[in-house]
Amino acid sequence: MSLVDGYDGRVTLGELVERWSPYADDLYLHDAGGPGECLVRRGQLLVGPDGVEPVVERLRRWVDTVESDDATSTATLRLRSSEHRNCIDIAREVGAAPNHVHLGSPVLFGTPVLFGTGAEARPAPSVPEPEDTVWDPPVRVGLLDTGLDPHPWFADRVWFEPVRERLDADDDAGQDRQAGHGTFVAGILLQHAPGVVVRAERALSSLGFTDDLTVARGLRALRTGAAARGERIDVVVLTAGCHTADDTCPPVLATELSDFSATVAAAGNLSSERPFWPAALPEVLAVAATGRDGATAGFSNTGPWVDAAAPGEAVASSHVRMIAGSAERDYGFARWSGTSFAAPAVAAEVARGLHEGGTPAHALAVARRRYPFGR
Image (cartoon, rainbow, N blue to C red; front, side, top):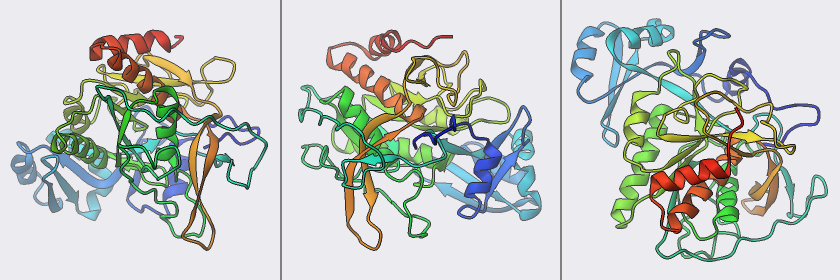
């Protein structure tokens, strides 16, 4: 989402909970304003396959239901309502994990500034279409986001498989705040690395949030989908993330990401130095955003865990817009700000390094040098 005049993009988790609560009634803000502040799904615990029976046995009087997720071999324990707000403390005691809520990483107030659709919000230059090519051998980028619409930049490419954007999930007759986010991110990838193949999975809502389990499922779907095609995913780009109460990575994310050789993730937009997961994992390339002056953007997370920084303010890319009262869609372009839009530029650099014959480690190192983060 673009910056609003006079607003630097900074937002608190409390403000986001207030904004999202009409659409998700299970959000719980733990330790609001404190050192362990994080957002979780109220009353949900995630347990790996080896720990389900002992955890359920210990919590029997507090557990309402147990749901198994075959895709990730993870069980979701739903606590009884009386214990919903104690889920983080209970998880710590029994070796389980809360189901953390992840934030998409565009600036979270305002809307994109569209142009090229015949309804320009302000004058803006056209955006050159990326070359329609596929590198040989192909380099495949896995994108977990809101979807991938048939924008003219993508629709005729040989690899294109639509993951249709949900533009109005809350049925309020207006476009949701992060609708079109995945289509925008894919456009940035192609502007910087036009020969990549994009494989998209929906894991982020058009309202701007997701959770540990949904992201883990998306990562598993990228891997199994590639295997079914006889492919592999060479680079993963993630544009959402979370804080945790103990500043450690949710186990289910660390497990799923261990199967990928190169992952690039947005550092987040909370103006914080606290680790933002999964970007802060040592094996993940965490990307902050810079402004037009080249300095770190005021909204961007920073810290010793950040590895790179790329332009993330007023970035121009492909976008989709709903037409009120119609099933038709407008395809044009927008300017949007956030670490969401810095990460794909760096992921594209990693893809270029692989295309040129580098190993994943070499390609990641080249990307760090190309987009250094000023500490």
